[in-house]
Length: 286
Image 1 (spheres, rainbow, N blue to C red):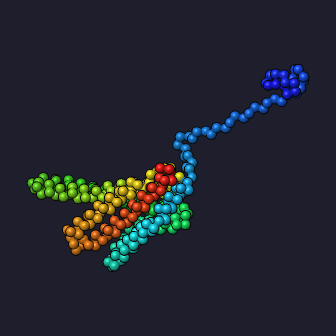
Image 2: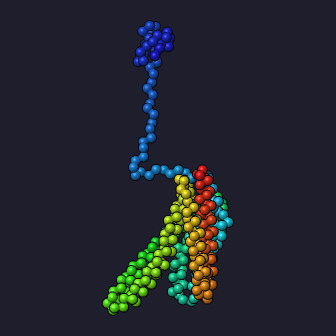
Image 3: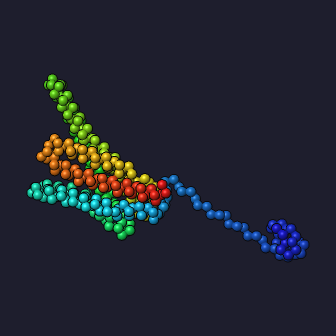
């Protein structure tokens, strides 16, 4: 450094100038810049706040007219199912219908809440949880049901083979086993669709729940795959309903009407999810 009075070059730690005797100011040490420690493995990292674009993507889909249509169809379906059991005048059927409808009713309440809040441009994580949690429980029951069907069918196949071999009726046993295999395949195909739909829908609901909890969706592509799957699933059900009508015209008419209602429900839901995926991708600049 240099003397502030006479300009003589001095040592950096000098307090007086040897030439003129002027007192010098000793430079103060600068504090080291503070560094943020890296996150510890396993320690949760704070999620980014949901952007206005992400919220807008959710509001556009959940508050749309199509969402209102889905809510109405779902409500009518559940009410119709309960009324049909009440009209059977069977106490046990009525009790089981009410118990079995609890999860569906919770989902419908969540759907109406999501639609109502989206119209008001307000977030409500409870609404999405009322949809997602009962849906997860329904999927668990579906897995248990298919597991029970699979085990009983396999045991029946083994029993049929053993009995046929012991009695010498191998031809009849082979036919019985073939029918059981067909039955198992017929149960497995819709279950596979159920698994695929659950995986996609649960992911989409998780994205919606994150946004409603004011967390960023982190660029997840929600809804696109599910929308396509639901349209395919609806088309297959319509084809099966038409085949059922041809095979049995008397009972096929009501079955076909029910199938068309369910297909409309899935297709409209698919359009909503595809729109949500599109709006969310636009929000993320994709």
